[in-house]
Image (cartoon, rainbow, N blue to C red; front, side, top):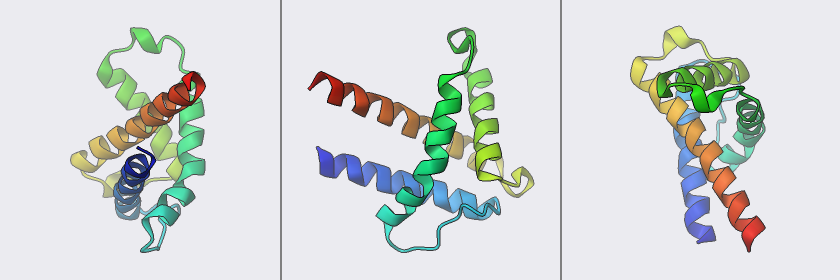
Length: 114
């Protein structure tokens, strides 16, 4: 299980990193080691996760409203030039960040219940 989760996080980091490069972010990691990539990005992802946890009325938001807020947090944290990203990139980075938040939440729940 741990190896699978590590692989998921590594792949997620690789995909986020590619979009950061396209978006001209200083967060882009020049490394061939996937675990190094996600390790470098965790600080930014955790900051976004903390902001997401404090969204008021998120249960009353539509999916598109929630995604817009999450995307804005991502752009702000990673200092992305959105003009350099196409709509697919914007959607994908939002989904990867959401996936990171969801996976860390679920992983923490599993650890608490173990």
